[in-house]
Image (cartoon, rainbow, N blue to C red; front, side, top):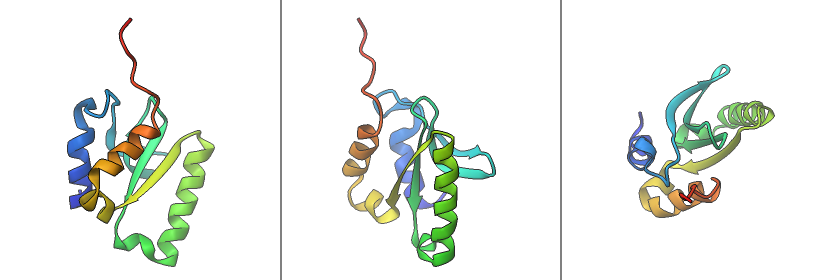
Length: 104
């Protein structure tokens, strides 16, 4: 895994983010997503420099369209965001999840 993925995984693994279970490098159809929360049908993608070519942007757009058709939401962050503002990235991920269940 690239360094940014390793860093984010430290916060997502073992259901650390408000109890939401994420999988890393999860296969969906012909695609492998960086992080996937099945309960939320949410994919978190991290984009490094290789994502900023026309070819890569087209590929990412096709992949997002495919995932959206399956009812899976995709949120994207740059690797730089993960290193420079991990708290904001985690808040954005939480904002895209349902509130955690509270015991009765």
